[in-house]
Image (cartoon, rainbow, N blue to C red; front, side, top):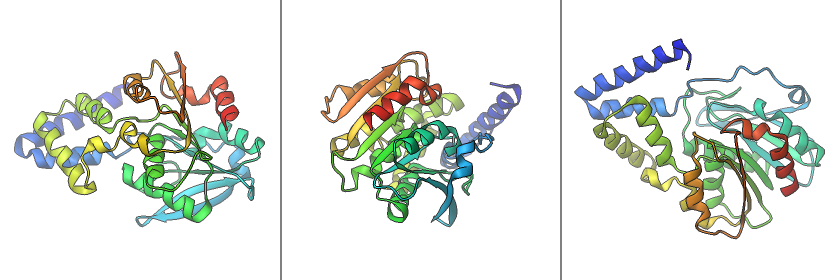
Length: 280
């Protein structure tokens, strides 16, 4: 972590903890806002393949969401979904491979990411975005999803009619929302009182407790053919959460584990790319 980032984190941590002394509820409200706010926005320039794309857009909660399409029209459609603090630009290699395989390829920047509008994003908004993409430009036959995009795709499919012909590639998906919250609270050193109010806020706003937003819970409703790719050294979405899903022995999931690629390098690995498109 750079010095400027350390100073910023220290300021946020001190501010939230001072606020918690006065009002744990107010501190929880601010913490939830920070939880959904990307602190980093990729400044990666548009890769060459994006110069060949058709620019698309949808409206989502009064925000313009930017998307891209290649190889239209084709009988099969592939949607690529990025993770938190990422963007479609980072998946140019998978987009190019999808085009070569004859797919019509779609990629959208989530709210507050890439070229899309907004300052914050939450899981329900990401799920709504996937739904609107399918309505406007689908139906989608195959998904390649990294991290936050992974848990969003599973929760979308859980409520959507689909079958084994739907292909779902999960790359280092955010498996358990509670794990992400655990990490967030450890990082900012927030109290259990604030955590309790934070979880209450999520339940009030979504109608569900945080533990509901879980791939392990939702997977029993997934009929799609799934390829789950995860690195043993992933410290963002830990392997321990994945292994609990694996214990359930879902017959529609194929697992592929790597070593030394972590959370982000995994989706740019050439062997991983081959594995993905062999599966598709």
